[in-house]
Image 1: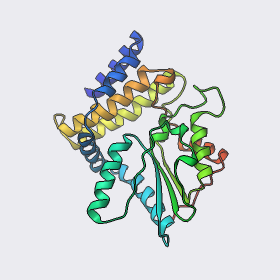
Image 2: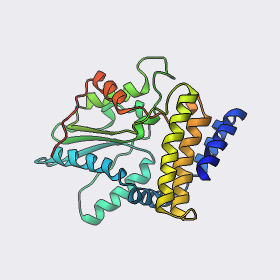
Image 3: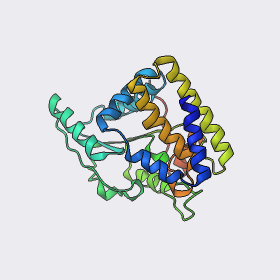
Image 4: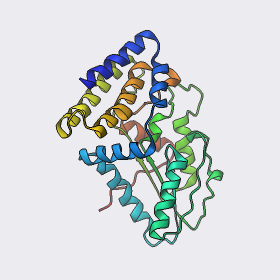
Length: 254
């Protein structure tokens, strides 16, 4: 079974001390952006809980921009240039004035001055699961650590709304066994879900399991230190961290 093979390979790599090399090789073999988008669309269509994060992202953004004439979205994401090209083409097709400015920096190295914020525009900041790859205080002993640096920068931007989507889990535990058990439970459930919605030879399912699930499981199980980039925390920990940075939680709108 795919889930057992993935966990077994992660454990074997950990014991052999080759986790970092194997994870880098998985990243190097990553499919094209088009294939990943198709697989992610399949993943979205298959999971009733995934569209919820987009619903909660779009609704506050819509409420924030009501009555405004200019919208500025700061999106913490990966593959910036490819994303910008697709957004620019989409805006061109529907006739919406659009400017894209990609910043090729580490997330914690982005500063307010890099963004060209206009006081007259509505500023919306969005992060869909990307802040979970930042190192925290368990790795970076200097203060502030990258997570706190990013949240502090967001506070300085003074956005109308900041939407932060997280994986509510604790499989970033510094101790291996609790992390292993948590990851196994989470991803076993996801593999079970795939079993109910698509045959095992479905190309899109194979892509999801290989390029999303397997890479994450391998990194969580086989890697340590700076090489372990999959570090989700519970929403309560992120909430406390955000409050320490000076951010305030908004009520859920209608």
